Length: 281
Image 1 (tube, one colour):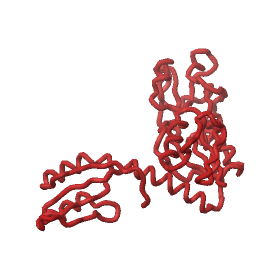
Image 2 (cartoon, one colour; image 1 turned 30 degrees about the horizontal axis):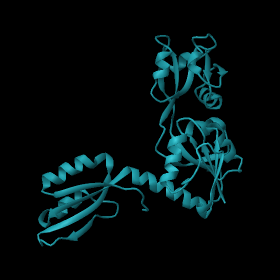
Image 3 (cartoon, one colour; image 1 turned 135 degrees about the vertical axis):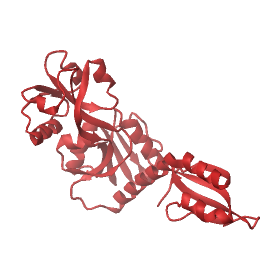
Image 4 (cartoon, one colour; image 1 turned 180 degrees about the vertical axis):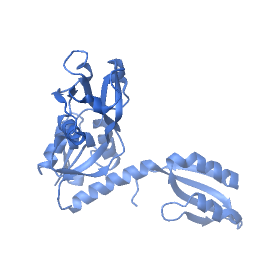
C-alpha cells in the first residue's frame, strides 16, 4: 500500500486535500482524521504537521509527501522535490524596521529571528554574513518590537503582517517557495508512485487548460489552427455545410480570451469554452 503524508493545517492543507479529491482520492475522508485508508486506490494517507512531512519522507517511512519547498529545505531531510503543485506560493525574505537597512550585507552582527533556522543558517553561510539566529516557533514579526531581534526572516505571502508590525522586506527573496510533492532521495519509483504522480500532474494540467470549440470557414482553417494548435494538434470535423469545419482544441486558460478575440476576428462562429475536469496526456 502506498503511504502518503499530507499537511494537516495551514495554507497547504485545504488546497492539498482539494487536489487529491480532484485526482480521485480521499472521496470519503473525514477532515479530522489523522490516518485515512483509501481502499479503492490502495493508498494510506497520514495527516501531519506541515514541517514534519519532509522528516517522515526523508526517513523512508512515507513514500510521498506534500509540503512547501521552504519546509523541505529547512528540514535538511533526505528527501527530494519531484513535482511543483501550483499552489501556496510564497517567498522567504528578510524584513527590518522601516528605514533602518536596505541591503543584506548590513545584517552582519545583527540578531535575526526566524522559524526556519536551517534555511536561514545555510543562506547566511553562503553569503558569509555573521549574524545571530534567534529561533522562534511562530509570530516572528513581533520579535523586533519585543527587543529580542534586530530583523526577522520569514515566509511572506502578501507581506501584510510584516507591514502591520512596522517592518519592510529588504533585498531579493532568499527562496521562492510553493507546494511540492516530495519522495525519499534515490528511491526507485514504484508503479503506485508513478500512478499517483500522473494523477496529480493531470489535475494541474486540467486546471491550466480549457477546451475551445468553434466553427470556421475552410478557407481560414489553417490560420485558425495556428491560433489553437492544441497539445498534439486540434481536432477538425466536417460540418453539413461543406464550406465550414468544426474545431476543438486545448488552450491555456490564461490565454483563452485573447484567443477567442483572434478567432472571432478571423471569422469563427459559435466559439465555446469548457472546463477540463481530468485528463491524461
